[in-house]
Amino acid sequence: MLSRFAKSLPCLHRRDVPTPADTAAPTQPAAALPSATDLGVSEEKLAEWRKLGGGDLEPVLASGAVALLDAQWIISHAEAGGVLTHRQALPKEAFLSLADLVEATTSNPYGDWLPVGALSYPWLTKDHPDPRGANLSRVARALKVLLSRPDLIPRLGVFWDFGSLHQHPDPPNGVLRTEEQNALFKQGLGCLGTLYSHKYTRVLRLTSFPDGHKAEDQAEGTNVAKYFDRGWCATENAWASLTKVYALSLDLGKMRAGREYDYWSLMFDCTQDGGRRPPLLPSAFAAELETKSFTNGKDDKPLVKRLYEAAFEEQFGMATVLHYGGLGWGDAEAAQLAEVLASGAAPQLEELALFANKIGDEGCKALADALGKEGAAPRLEKLELHGNEIGDEGCKALAAALKEGAAPSLKARDAPLATRPSPAQC
Image (cartoon, rainbow, N blue to C red; front, side, top):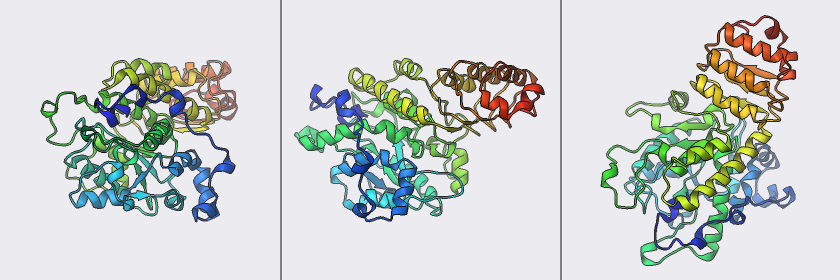
């Protein structure tokens, strides 16, 4: 994202490039976080917000490093034919406060999530991400569907880089961020990994260009690569692929023109057919990053590698439940996940759900082999593989691994699998 906000403009100097100290996530003891009285919210709401990890975002929200746009404002602005301007030019009513977000936190029978979303998308020009408002309209379409279920999402604060981080207001005319704004900008960059990878934030990935957008029409110096070929987009996509449930990482590029969506049909379309990849080890992510396009790769690559590794270690280190059901994953995806498990990255993992995918014998064998590695998910108690394409060969491999001592808690809980391997048992 650093390149997005400078876009090779002459005002970007080495001093603008965040160092590890600049982008370190601010650490505050719980006592330093605002109280319910400070925020003007109920104790119950604040407790629910922090139970879901909202406290991880409070430092950058309270400092003003990050400002979240009100999803309802985005919808209204798009329907009025508006174009998004940079953060400093947006009206106060465009944003939700920390108190607004806390009050919007609610429980529902379909899962847990914070009222926080993060948009991942490719900028369309080097100076403005969406000069004609085409992407604004596409995002608003999805947000309107999400907010059509106020019982599930009463309000939603959206991180949209151009409107959420301090920008250089008018670089060609020498109007840049102030020193204070620059410091906040760097603090905001340091929180991106948490914003996108947090288990309970909702990531909206705009993986396609709007109709009529042509790379050949762009000015020289514009990054014209597609979503999955861009460094920052690939990073955001990788963050969103770590530990979230399926409904919290949506590929808006899969929305179909002309279709009238409701909440659940949007969930279905935006999570199917490769809409979500398995998590990547930091080493694998770093290797992939070498093939991606950056406007300012010299500085951005080491930054995003560092941020990705920190987010990976944070999210997998504390994960107790991983739900990857219904994502269309096959053997290749199962093998990629197996690499993560074999690395010992998930020492607290108790439940792994892979139901309703397309995993076959080879994928099951890869998982069995991974669970047999020392330190691989030692606390795993529940493994859900029903609704896949696993036959006797895969089940026998898993049963053999359990007999050899893999996942001892799982073996004790699912003893019949170890003695009577069959597709039904899987």
